[in-house]
Amino acid sequence: MTTAAGRFAPSPSGALHVGNLRTALLAWLFARTTGRAFRIRMEDLDRTALGADAQQLADLATLGIEWDEPVIHQTDRLDVYRSVIAELTAAGETFECFCTRREILEAPSAPHSPDGAYPGTCRTLTAARRAEKIAAGRPPAIRLRTAVDEFTVIDTQLGEYTGMVDDFVICRGDGTPAYNLAVVVDDAAQGVDQVVRGDDLLSSAPRQAYLATRLGYHRPGYSHVPMVLGDKGVRLSKRDGAVTLGDLAAAGVSTPIVLSRIAESLDLAEHGEIVDAATLATRFDPAALPRDPWIVTPDIWG
Ligand code: GLU
Image (cartoon, rainbow, N blue to C red; front, side, top):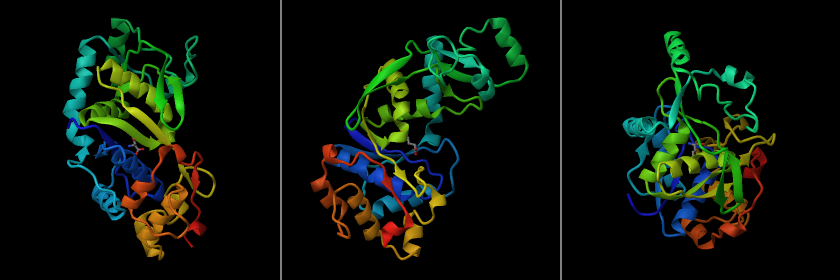
């Protein structure tokens, strides 16, 4: 998989809602209009729903979003993540962390470290203290021993963004590789050099770009796109009612109308214009994309 690629990396915890579908469409448009492959990765290390991955692929296909095989599942790649974690550990670049979430929140933060940063409690644990903690039966998480406090990424939509890089978790206490590690390893393995995703993940980009650099990978370019919000101005979710293709179809809103509304929200179609994904690709201009969130309320479908 050496071709330059873009990607969509959903968590298969249920059907995709129109916000996820809009992000997927954007990722596809960015990739296909720049001659890239488009890859899909199921981020299934956390909660998943049976059959959600197949449903998500079917919904993407219905919208005319096609992808390059194979679709990968993170749960099939645990050995790969573990070997990267082992390599970093062998090189002395990690440490075990026994802190609970609460201890981290309550610890006085280290001087100069930003709010919410890991306070460094376990970074310099003595062998004796470590042995005590292990004897107490608390399974450690593994954190990356970082050499910087912040890192800068360039985002095509948002410009230069500098964000915090603390000693972040790369393997959770239960032995599951952490999201920030898996994303970086997979993007490199899938030849992804273009990351398009919701701007709720912007603050993760510096950690991920830093880790990519530490691992000797090429850093991808980033395009964080505006979120889709529900009625109350908070991130769209199932609680906002009919927001998946299946729910909308059941309510009489056909898939072409859904695609039309998504395209309209991106200034790529007129209201009510029926368009296919290939036509949207001919109109796509990243510089002209709206910068504000798209607000999805039940009345937009009428
Ligand atoms: N799996 C993440 C999500 O569904 C996306 C991760 C990414 O695009 O880097 O929110």
